Length: 196
Image (cartoon, rainbow, N blue to C red):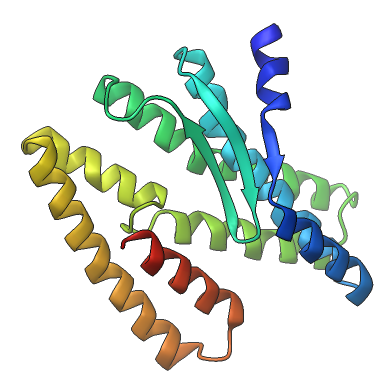
């Protein structure tokens, strides 16, 4: 029981996220912000809960303005099956979240508009997170696949090159398909910076 309380105490919120929350409140976008925060928090706690189950040492669960991360002491020193399970645990949370939202909408606990908003954010976060770009979960899964076949350094280099290619494709898609979408540009810049 103490390890689960300890996990909750390791949740940290980036200061800029508090500013965004205040802006969301002032501009009437609190519902959207709460949906996003709930989805990101549950996603990250999915990773963290399985990491705790495997006795990984967690530094913190960090909620950022554009997502979240679980910082752990373990880096490539655990069995691939454990690493795979911890990585995939985050995306799997989106399934039960969507089912729960659907049930709440069916019983008229959630308004249809809120359900549609939640569904859009939930599926968007899931699909973006599965892009094969490091440090997203898709990029981490790709690295595990490469690690199974190649030595660590080669797998790491190949993963970064592959991530860079997909990041450039994402940048082109944002530029030509949704150029006015600020959140897409923030995501692209974050991923590009993470690769360098």
